[in-house]
Structure formats: C-alpha cells, structure tokens
Image (cartoon, rainbow, N blue to C red; front, side, top):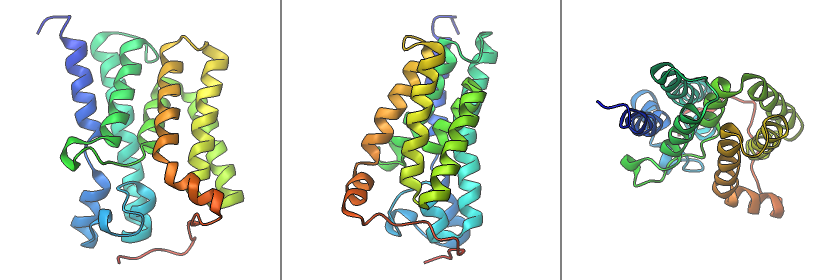
Length: 208
C-alpha cells in the first residue's frame, strides 16, 4: 500500500471501528433488550444503563471510549506522528462520526460523547481530564446526563482552542464534535427548556 493511501485507509478503519454498536450488541446478548426500542432509544451507555442494567451501561461506556481512543493511537503509531497531529486527530473524528452515523444502523447511532472522550484522552489527556471533571461536577449538581455532556463538550472545545489556537487539528476536531453533540442533543435541549428532561436514577436499572 502506498504512503498516500495509508492515511485514508486508517481513517476508513477508524470510522468502521467507531461504528460498532456495542450498546446494541451488549443489550441483545446479555439482557435480551433492543435498546433502540426501549428507554430513549439511544444505543449509548446512558440508555443501556437504564434499560439493560448499570453493569452493561458501564461496559458500553468503556468500549465506546476505547473505539475512540484506539484508532487515534494506532494512526499515530503507524504514521509515526505525534498523537495530536493532523491524521491522528482526523482518526478520532472519524471514529466519533462512525458512532454517530453507523452504516449498519441506517446512520442512526448514538450521541458520540463517550467515543469523543476516548479520542481526546489520547489527543489531549489533560483537557480530557478537565472535561471529565466538568462532566462529573455538572452531573453531581443536575443528575442530567445531557447537561453534563454538553458542558463537557463545550469545555473541551473552548479549552483546546484557548491553549492550542482555533487553527490546530485538535481544536478543529473539538469544535466539530461540539457542533455534532449539540445537534444530536437537540431533543434533550428542547426537553430541558420545557423542564421535562429525565434524570439518571442512582437506583440500578434492570432489563425492560
């Protein structure tokens, strides 16, 4: 394979890795639940936790994050680039878009927050840590995952731009992620404005 084709092949592989619907697969295999027809209908960790149990929700979270981080690390290693260089950053974005728009599910995937976080853990670890702290703090106050996710995505985009400038590859990816996350949370934002957004219960959820 020529050097010109290799980066694009890695991006395609990153997109396909991101498109693996772990939440859907785990719900079906271990709880007999199709998460697309239960709860919010989302394939992400929050809905898996609500409809198939918190253990499966946590496993979904870890796997969704891994499918964001591993493509970034592999791309950097194969191309011999820094983790925050252009191609690794693009691989993280490709994995994120794979989760949000998986071809296997008619391009109707999850909201991508965990996958984006996994990518940013490799791209910019300290900013990923800060965004995780912001998520945790927002969730502790509101118990609303959508609010926490939006806050974390906003802090990530703003923080990376502040320290690396808006023209850096990670900054551009963080801004793209923020735009997609906001759009994917449009329904949540509408419910928040109406005071109808659901809170994540501390009580363990079981299969429904």
